[in-house]
Amino acid sequence: MKNRIISLFLLLFSTLPATAEYFRNLGLQNGLSQPSVLSIAQDGLGRMWFGTQEGINMYDGEQITYVKGEITNADGEKLWIGNYVPFIVHDIDGDIFFIADNNLFGYDIHTSTFKQYTTDNATTALAVYQNEIWYARKDSLFAYDCRQHTARSKVKLPPYTVNTLAISETNIYVGMMEGMYIIPQNTLQPSRFLLENIDVYCIFESSDEEVWIGTRMQGLYRLKDNVLQKVPYALTGSAGIRNMQIRAFVEDDEHNIWFGTFVGLQKYDVRKQTYTLIQIPQYVGGLNHPSIFSLYTDRQGTIWIGSFYGGVNYFTPDRSGFVHYDYQAGNLSNLYYSYIGEMTADKHGNLWVSTDGGGLGCINENWELVHQFTAGGLNSIPHNNVKSICYDQENDYLYIGTHLGGLSRYDFQKKSFYNYLEHQLENTPAPRHFIYQVKMWNGKLYLSSREGVFQLDPVTNHFTFLFKPESYCINFDIDAEGNFYANQADKVVIVPFSDVTQRSTLKLQDMGYKGSISHVRVTKDGAYICTLGSGLLFYDRNIKKMIVYNTENSTLPSNYCYNVKQTASNKFILTGDRGIILFDPKEQSFTSLGQKEVYLKAPIIRDCGIYVSSDNKIYIGDTKGVTLLAEC
Picture 1: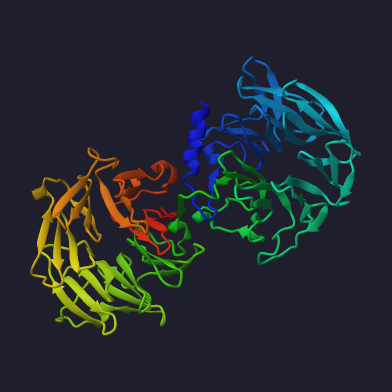
Picture 2: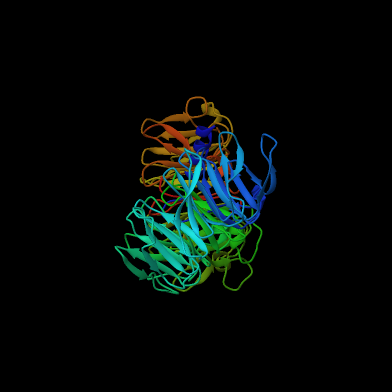
């Protein structure tokens, strides 16, 4: 069971993004007993434990179970656990110890039974060191030996209320409402008293032996080499803390310090020596509640965050994977749309997304929807059903192909739209209402429409008719030599721009393949063809031969492929009815990027787009928003 649970956690936590902090949430909808999570720990079986205002919860990676109030052990013994659980720790064997309603309890993971250790409602703080569980009870510190199963008094304290304990190899740190004591391990006598009359709420010693001290209302302190320093309060910038209430600390694998405050999660970057407040909208995977009460780093490096009325959030700072932007939640106009189609980025750092019915959206680097262009305005797109977009970096234009509204162009410098149907003469050769795809190639815009395939000169704004396919060209691509690959239902037509009369056709049925074509993507050696039923095909134009990848001859998980895009590392991102797949042509391998039910917030369908940015981030549209993958 232990291996199964840890493997499950590795699967869950390998699906979170690098270089940014995006959070998953467990709340009442997952079975949490109460949304105020005050304490967190992990037992020896890999399960996570959460202490709340109403009981203690155990999460095994699939479901949450909890106990509160009176419980019955496996042997029939009745035990009053209580409700308020501010501390949880695990011993050297992985058993759980916790304080509930100011009494100490334990849970044996091998017998699945609870035990009560103190009964006078006077236990106020808890910590673990080696094989001992330390706890504060009235005016004394006690240590319970987990191997000998005995408890004894260790340190006598002044009659102060103990809030927190932290124990290192050299010192015991005791945080109280009246200040903080430092007690050397070799004497077990209080030797130094700091922060007199300041309510010390939490204490943490980092890997470099620096002591971080959080107070209830007086901010953050750092103790290094016997020098005490108060961290500045900085409402903006990176010089200090954003809030004076500091509740919990953890250290990540890169030795950065994370601490919870009343207004959110802050990070101290040890390399840059800067403080950052993590602010992410909830519809991008932000914290469900800003008031942080507990933090914990598990054995896989995942950071767990307990919030006040927001349940549990968790993320892994240094692992690549996925994050989802809920476009509908960020959509200020609340327009209905069916899916996110093509996407592109401009040189100003914005991501542009096209929707089937919801118009055109512009999202900045902070995942804020800065523009929402919809039809009907004086300066906007001609129709809300946007089929294709592309960016002309040289002229700073965005071209927008719509269904029913024709072609539009957005000028970034003028901040204005030019809708071509409003300026075209009826009898001149030009695309009209139905635009299927637009693409920049060699400084010119190429587009397919019901009227055929056209070239547009961005400087003269003049259309040149190239040719008309036998049927509608739903999507196309162009290789470096100027060969136009047109997807026409069940065939790919290859048209050289040097002589458009010299066409060749790749028809699925003639080659023994079934289904239809959903997408075509060229490479320097040929073209990948996504099919609905016959897997992924590759046409090698050098040897004029088709190579097929399907579920029978490869690790491709499904024969239904929707879209494909090449990454900067010469691999390919492939979407299909089984989610997102990474294809390595060198190794001839297909890898499912996580499990579909884990990372996908909404289904991906055949019309959803893929965009690979210049820094090799992959954006994938779905029926609810955009999934962002870190570099593959």
